[in-house]
Length: 376
Image 1: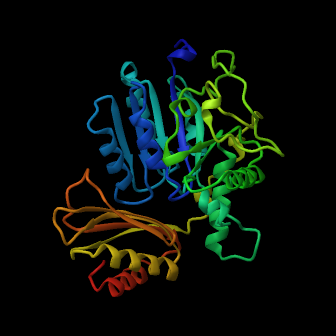
Image 2: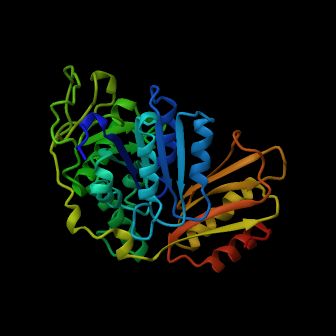
């Protein structure tokens, strides 16, 4: 079989990042400005309910040129995943209808699992890695929530380790949730990123969880040569370095506002995936048939996250008003419950909890007590 040309290969962008970093929101915004690209999206969730997949389908709004594939019940491309390769092979079969593949990994996964399989003979004849993006919850980074240099609990050490490894395998780090931060905050965030992963190629800013398609798709960072990477650059005021700040205005460049132009090797052959080292991460779904008061539920979830090692919650809520569809999103003790116009009111409340050595019974008991409703 003849080796296909580079132009015949389907580019793949991997989007990684820790729980609650905003990967789904960023991808949802990205597909809205996809510039007529025909996309296949693989959405991976560490849990039994595909909340992120539902949100992504709402963003796609039935567009026939956006195909979404859900990967729940585990980590995509890891040893127990028997869906990843067949799904990509099926995408390759309809090569004429696909311009780009986007893969959102679970917040508890490393992108290296996908990267390894893309290099196997079975997939390398049809796909090529375009770039790996790591999305960062910048306020959490600035609050030292990813720091393990002090005497901390096992969950914190596990979080710090996974976060650092996700950065090390990324080409591009996207600083997300930055709308209320100033330039000094952004400079501090960049410093902390480069301390953890000095060989990250580029840092980008995502205001309102939005990223220019030119900064995310078509980067061609893993082609054998970058001679075909035909971007034009105009002079820029400064590039990030030891004594300079991030560019606050990407409009200063024609193409990419890139810093840290040092290439790096991922060293995949010697890497053991994080989740295979630490199986303490758990996910479960709690459901309630009782209508919920949003503020009371928000308080209850916050108190539950303080008492138990809950790192991420997400789900749809049964409201007292049957016309209301409510979405809950939480990272640690930061909870947001909002109306969700794209979905009809839920028939039952369904919330995914993710954490480190979580006790389902304790969480259900505490939530039931605090809301005066039944959760199980």
